[in-house]
Image (cartoon, rainbow, N blue to C red):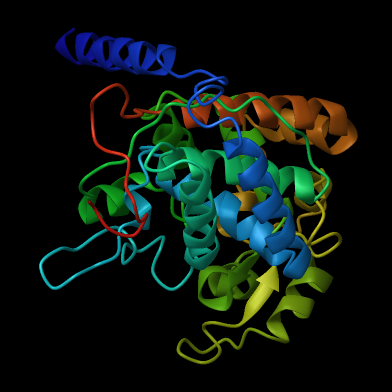
Length: 313
């Protein structure tokens, strides 16, 4: 009973915080903010299409919190989240966020938070790669600290099975549908060999031709080619579409956690639906992104509006 009550309290707090967010938060204080972010994201993605996936992933990895804590760089006296297992050597795009922040600061001094820049940049990245749009709720503030241990414990690892993936999302108030829809972000981007080596060499629920293709650039021996990259969706690696789900149905999910969504379990039906109905995927993905963006934001007088996203004021 006590645990149920604590979950209820957390959900109530989350609802109260998200109620303070609004898509028009900057309409008076910084009316040029959204256009400035969009132009910068569009240019960055045009220059390097992979950057769209990187910016989306930054928001994901921030948003098991949504407070820009992931952007805080380590110092001699501070250890942030960038060295956490799910982040180390893989999250990128900090330079683009820094550039966007500088451009926004030039039009509105210390008004738009880094957390909101991440949320808007994620949406604009998806749109730039041909995906759906949605109304981003705004008004988040930036944290003044970060938690390496929480990043390690809360961010879903690519080795998780369906039960643990479901539990990790449920811990943040996200449903099984949210899990499957948000995983569709893997229709863009790349993964390192070290994160899919075990799948392509040891697992049996994998298309043989696909495994052979991926082994060509990912040697079996650990420490050999660990950082070699492969697209999460080989068919349309820089287009935001529903091909990720057709990959799963064909047993060609790159990560163990990907294929777990279509492996004889409770999410098989939804994967088939998304594979067959791109409009349904786009709708559910957009709705899930809004819900994810509402996870425990700092609002009101909490936190701060950082001047530089990589450090506290």
